[in-house]
Length: 228
Image (spheres, rainbow, N blue to C red):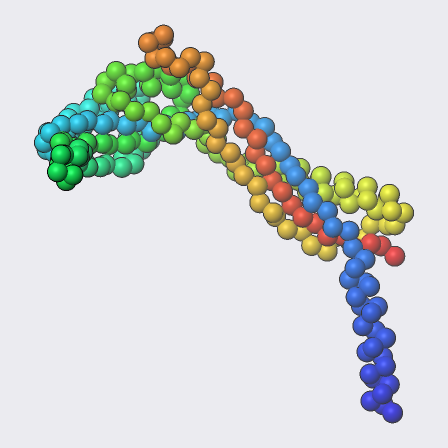
């Protein structure tokens, strides 16, 4: 008899527990903080070709030395410049026999530069090209310290989710119970590409660029119990 009473109790209690677990309100929230970037990262490339590999590498070394000189004049510190890659590869051409033959070598050196004073950026781009660089790529505008903006975006995301939960509870005619779970769904601090006012270096002694604005985003998910 006791065994049957226990089984009957568990059978009756199961659905009630499931019902309680379903009495929740699930919401998500997003926070966005807009900021003006205060730093840029630029990749400067020096590429040279020569029939001899050592001559190609020597020409690249000379060009990189000139680029470093331009960086020194612009006040770019050593900590803000980094060699991203160095390469040397043969160049081929097809022959009448179908077998390729080496016609020369291409050497390249890519330097990533962090520019902390954006007012120097346009002039720096023009100066490095004039002093040996023949490639510019990967220009991104970034934030030097995104952490405070990310925290503010998270606060806004939580406030957004709380507002939705209160609205849903009111619209459904129920009371909002305690917060059960809160999870950070991530977000991102974007990098923006350049906006060129003009694309021809010859039109100006300094390449015009515009950094624009960045949106720092955060997303959260929250689960509230429905009050009694």
